[in-house]
Image (cartoon, rainbow, N blue to C red):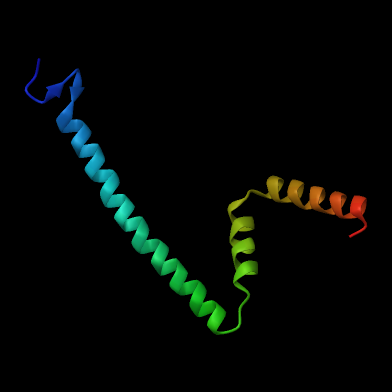
Length: 82
């Protein structure tokens, strides 16, 4: 058994992976904070943040998925007379 193995687990490799994840989690916190700041700035100059988030969600989708979502939304609206 290798010196860095415990119960068949490569502890050096496991520790390296855990540390990488922890660093990325810290970076993610910083990025999330930056995004919140940008939304606050947008709101401060009069933009509707809820609509901005919806646009960002739509831009992440491919055209076929957007078309399907819009079709279903319109179908549900008609069914509910909204």
